[in-house]
Image 1: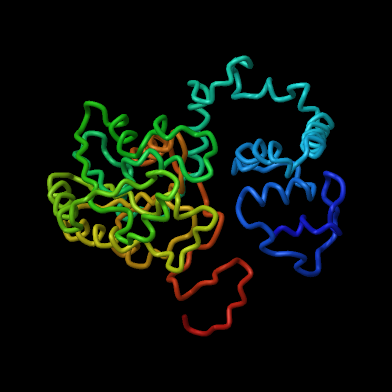
Image 2 (image 1 turned 180 degrees about the horizontal axis):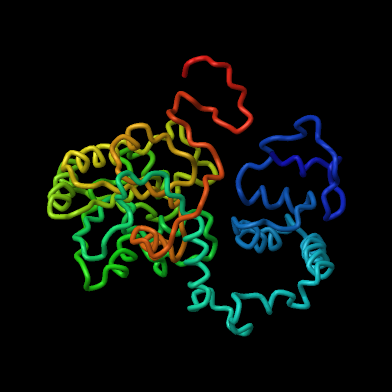
Length: 348
């Protein structure tokens, strides 16, 4: 809202405490370049991640719309804060997993991956396990199905900063790693994460984060059903794409998207034991899924080693101890749901 562009609010590089009681300005820039000009002249010394400063400041300096003195002041303020925080002394060079080499800053080192796997395992929550469906037997024939089962980008999650999706372990890969030569793993995508073109376009506006299978929904379901019929147990990896659960991604309906719900219903109709592995960044309404699934494992977005961590739990190599940090609604109509909600006794 460019409140900082008001001359009355300009001050030191540190924010002044106290509430702003009214909107000062709104919509003061015509485009990103003008926003950079206005922001820098108003004391906004840096831009977090949009790269507009680095993109537009050279041209603004050349045109004279921003002076070198103003640029020097902004840089000085940023450097002074870093100096006061001791960042020039490299205070974090010693950090890393226990027993790691302090010189090795490779986040994909073996020790870092070990820590990532452990953290992921500790975050998993077993929501349901009817008739001891879990743990799975490594000697079984396992059908792994679902649009998120082999998605490296989604298991890594949103706001994963410098994470490299290609280095992520998917659920499908994790299960294959665990089974090895003992059993058999079959795979079918079964559905796209959603059939809503508008949502797909939104999710793919910056990169092809969601790969859309061009086949018809029925063709994909038919393939998944045939795969399930050849198996002893079905593991369906369903939920939300990572882009559905970050900033500017609120949903009006927190059920699993319809394309995946149709897939789950078809898998249930095969009569095979059905394990749902959920990926999601918010509580989901799981009324129908709770009735259909024999076991449900909440995995959130488990990170680089997510697939291996999930397999550890599915096969009983790790006992899931995670607890839900928030309430899951019984149905969408029950929302809002929170701990201190006053129960009126009225029906939902």
